[in-house]
Image 1: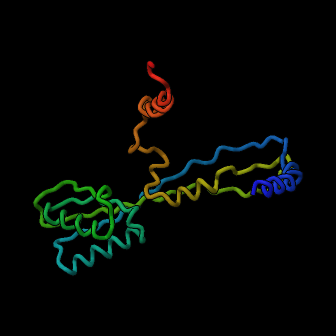
Image 2: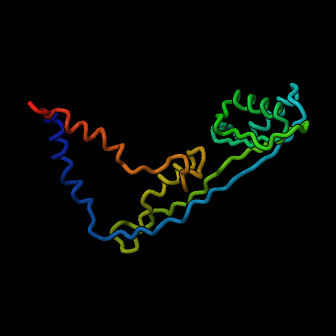
Image 3: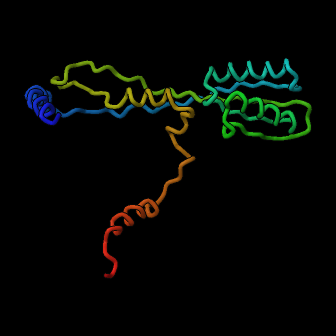
Length: 187
């Protein structure tokens, strides 16, 4: 197996060596990513069968089939709010994405469904050939575009508040333990 790899490497080395370029590549900073918030509202008076179906239709339409990206703000009657939150969790909306706000004894409940959409900058085409002086290579643009389309909450791409920065002391403990594991300690 190793012999096959060496033969393959020796066979490809001359063709790969010609691919390098000494001309500098100017990379323009890409435009900033825009995050747009889309909000829809629903008010319910009860959770009878017809209202539950209306709630499910509303959540399906608001999420566009991506319940993992849907954020709910529920305010109103505590009993109805709890029922709406239960129905939302049955549709696989995570509990972390459901917030109960302004609980009061009104006979209705207000549901605000929020979905965030990322608008990454448009990736430029490769355009000219690499040996021309006007060549601008869009490094990482398609990766950033794909990431922005895939994430549940694009605000995390701008500033992630869930993960706090650390000082590294705790992370270095396993390394220090590994280094001292095999040493003789006094004998």
